[in-house]
Length: 395
Ligand code: ADP
Image 1: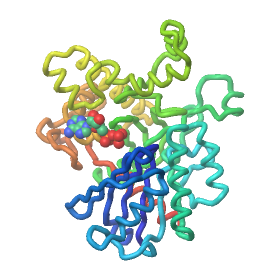
Image 2: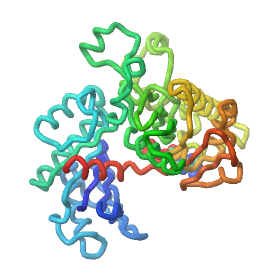
Image 3: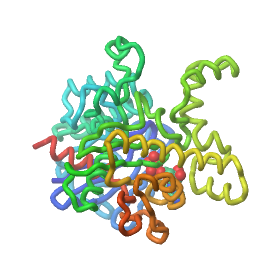
Image 4: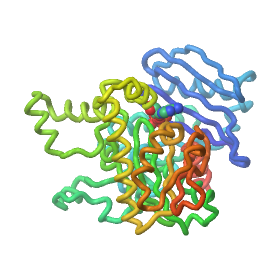
């Protein structure tokens, strides 16, 4: 069975074709600058093929990637009939979806209803689903939600302390994101620990441009740091994370800004970028810090402090922890961030081995021998989870 995994953003479309008998990646790529001009970057084996092609909309991009998949030189299949299902990443599933589902008219409507909760993400996800329905009628489409893994959180974790009617009327609550990543790395952590998934307590730190932490107790997510939207929780590349809500009206008054403008500022101009004034990229921040930039240092300090605070509070939530996992761009590659976070966590049994912590982009237990709680770096693989879920939903 071949599954095409699609991750549709507002102006880009990432894809992977996987053979699910062997869980083997066949080809992958990205259609970029959709609606602007259009660039296809397509990787097969260790080669990359790049070409400028007009992509006026997502449907055009889907057609172009289909052509790349069946191309006799750099493709992986001989005809579209060899695509047996499409798995779509959908960011927000609201309260309706606690698992991946085959897309029907009702499901499509429900995803549309969630657009209000994720106005930047759900609309392009839907466009991708609709483009595939048009181009590949009859091929089953499956929606895999970023929020689904967090659906098991108890009310004490997902409710906000605001009038309950607002939750009932508008479903204002914590949903959480990066669910496929937290699920994948927590499962891999159990494997690394050599224990069944339903017997371990794992705290997963997905640290990328967007960052979140999750508490996974015996395979069930019991809390996570992102909220109604991805703005809550850790400080991120450009997002503020947790902040006193009164700051919003204060900025509105002082800077003569609208609520919408302040939200934009908190989403796109804050985080380590806003603090440092240097960059949202951690490689640039470390370079600036080494050159004596105090604001870059403060941003790095705050970032790591917040990650450690969440890890501590999730150890409390689960009354213990077996392993803390670091994943995504920063978690997989940035040894100094991992070290800085772990230095706060000695009290709960984390001790790291500096030599092992030099590993980049690969699976490693970088704890000292005998440390009570294991510190792990695990490369995430959200596409594989989407493909597995797609296969499972079609059973
Ligand atoms: P996204 O959330 O967009 O998927 P990623 O998980 O790819 O993001 O993470 C991107 C971030 O990872 C970059 O902004 C950068 O800060 C960080 N990063 C990537 N590679 C490295 C590296 N070698 N060292 C430190 N940080 C890195």
